[in-house]
Length: 294
Image (cartoon, rainbow, N blue to C red; front, side, top):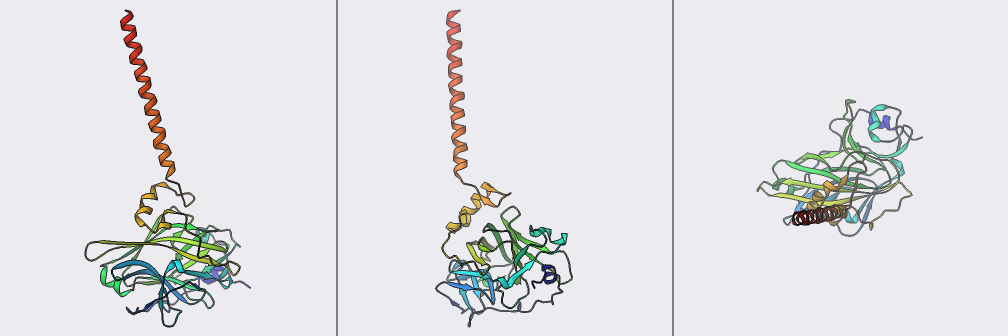
């Protein structure tokens, strides 16, 4: 029988959560090739290597631990993560009806479920920034809702960090040398991509920014997808392009509107201006003819 989501999330968690106390070796290897990670501990985070600021996935399930490129990595959420939405208004923020079956990656590790978190513990990052980083959800592409939230061990109200049902972008502040895990809830099985930025003010006064798309395959029947490109502006990997496109976003749906709409609006204004100028010229010519007749 599938346990209820309420039983999972309201269980009093130990403090601190086991597995969060870690430090990263500056010499950890960079993995190559594609990988599907469906169990064990993984973290999303910034990495500074050879002067380049990037977003990577720290795979702690591998022995020894390695860093992986998000474009070559799919986080697979197996059906062992299935839970049911409780009949409790406290969880209305998930955007799903009570009794609906969803996939949940819990903030405490569960056997058979990939354990997804984030960290700012790369030694290069710690040495380069003074305070922390901003992790921003820029877009979500997938068949269902996505919600990331924290549940405290004292049965306090859930703290929603990211939600595909809310207007985007959604920034989240993360202190330096932090390691955190949260609850990830996926409304329907299928392939998802989450467009994410991580930016920080460096100690030397410059700003570092990187963008990526996290790939997740939810459900045993879902074939991991490495090839489909994210259709938002972030597909090009440009945070500045994404920032320029923010004003064109439809916040009600979380989708990105085409910049061509802006060009059409400018063209319409030019046509109207030309018509007004023509009407003014005709009116001036008529007035001169009336003066000549008098």
